[in-house]
Image (cartoon, rainbow, N blue to C red; front, side, top):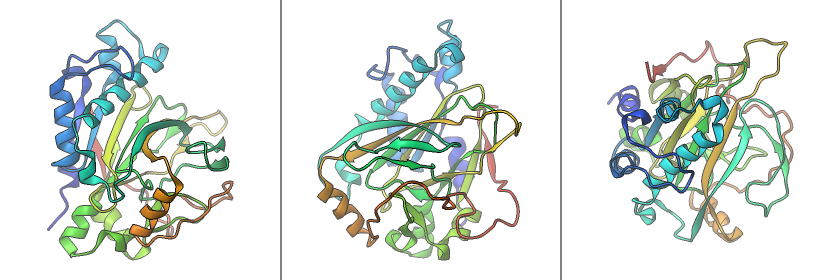
Length: 299
C-alpha cells in the first residue's frame, strides 16, 4: 500500500488567516473549530498538522510580522495549546505519569550552547537533529519555524512511521535506536531508506517571510517522526539563523524517562557537548542526490 504522506500534508495544512484567531498571547483561547480540527488531525488523522500564515493573521490586525515575532510565537503556541486541551492525553502515553508542557528556543543551523532541556541535567552544546527521528519521551511535540535569515534548504520533513509499520507488520520499537551523544531516537539503518524514500515528504513553505508551527503525535508506538533537509547559507559570507521554538511535554522524575527508553528497548545514553556527529538527513550514509520530495504549502 503506497504511503499517503503527500496527500496527508495537503489535508493537514491550515491557513491561520482562515480563522478568527486572537493575538492575546500563548494562553489565548482560539476558535473551537480550529482546535478541534488540529486535534482530529493529530489523533484520528495523519498524526500531524501544519499551521501557517501567521503573517496574514497579524496583517489583519495591522501588524507586520518582522516587528512582532513575539506576537506570532504567542499565536502559534496558543494554537498548539488549544488543540492539546481537547485531547485525551493518556491514550497516547506509554508511560502514564504526569507531564508538563515546556518550550525551548534554539537555532536549527548554528551550534546551541549552554543548554539543559529541563534544567535538571547538565547543560551542553548541541546541534538540532535533521535525521529522521522521534523526540524522546513526549507524546506530542510542536516546532515553530521562521523567520529564517540567509538560509537555504532546512525544509521541515514528516515521516509516516506508523503507516510503514502497519503496512509491513513491524513493531514500531524495531525501527528506532539511540543517537550517540543525543537524547532523541533515530530510525535504524535497515528501515531508513524505505521510510525516507516512500513514507516521507518535506514542506516547501516560505519561512523566510512567515512563521509556522508543525504539530505532531510524536510517540513512537503511534506516531509520526520528523527531520529536515540540510540547511545551508545562501550567502556563505553572511551570518545565518534558523530560529526554532520547540515544545514538548516533560516528566517530573528521572525514573519516568528511564521507563520510557526501557519500553522501546533503547539505551538511555548520556549526552555531552556536540562533537561533530552527523545529524543530517543522510544520517547513515551519503545521499545519492538532494532530497526532492517537497509539498508546496501556502501557494
